[in-house]
Amino acid sequence: MKSFIAIIHIMPHKVLLDPAGKTTLQAVHKLGFDNVLDTRIGKRIEISLNAQNKDDAKEIANQIANQLLVNPIVENFQVEILNA
Image (cartoon, rainbow, N blue to C red):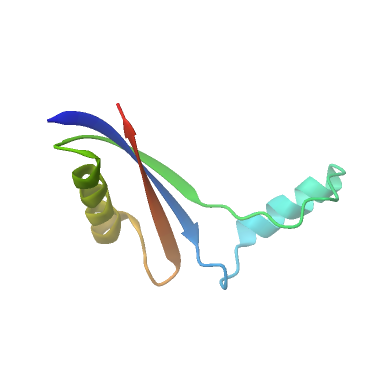
């Protein structure tokens, strides 16, 4: 077994309102960063795990995300696997 770090990036679907993202965008514009077009707020979760290889680690992380971490009605996610 090898050690891996699974990074799960969770974001709201683009078609949904993101009140925190809109508030952040307004604050960014008040700071004078008028060239910023949009901001969206999501979550990043890191999981340390053991697996045979990167593909197995990604499958485990996908299962955890689907079964526990992500609400597929309002969120989507991506999994990134790093060597520990």
